Image (cartoon, rainbow, N blue to C red; front, side):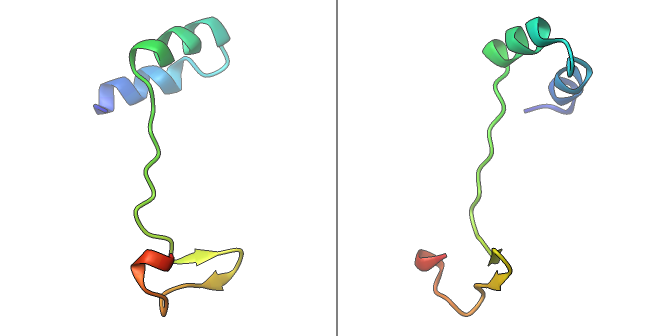
Length: 51
């Protein structure tokens, strides 16, 4: 996602119809590739596959 698209999404916050339309054309994604701590428990000693 470009910075410009991110700004458009942030500007639409609070305007549900506009935010919904933007989500249809520029959806946001969250990709977690490594968890270092979950619920206060450090996971660094675990292998990547278990994190």
